[in-house]
Length: 171
View 1 (cartoon, one colour):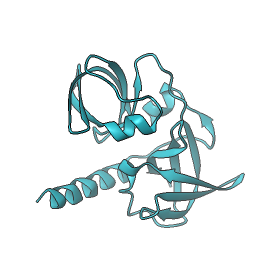
View 2 (cartoon, helix red, strand yellow):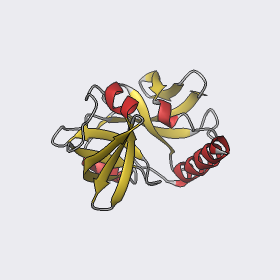
View 3 (cartoon, helix red, strand yellow):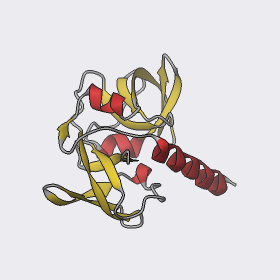
View 4 (cartoon, one colour):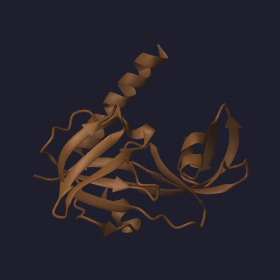
């Protein structure tokens, strides 16, 4: 049952992500403005609970969850109860990035034509004006399925070089 729910949730997430247009140019330095253009919101909160590798973060807009693996992979270490975090939340209300409060995000956006989307091997390739670029897919984002090669896209890459968000560009 949980597996079916996960598949449905990923399908809905993918469909919603693909409908959101983005107007970001290749290699733009990331700022809060880049996130906001992509439909993301910045939320600050406090870790209130830790169970089975999942962190509960209380924010002014509600409670969010974050996996311990995602936090450790970003090099921030595992948060503790009481730690303050800054979360970037997608238009689908999913946490796509988290940082200790006060740490600056260092993301970038890359636009071009999709040449490869390999969810199995966690890899994506985009042909830009500067040539083909390859990125790792963050495990939580391996749900991009309905984007065909040749489609103009914008890829958001975190400070670890992992894709945290992907959008079809306006045609």
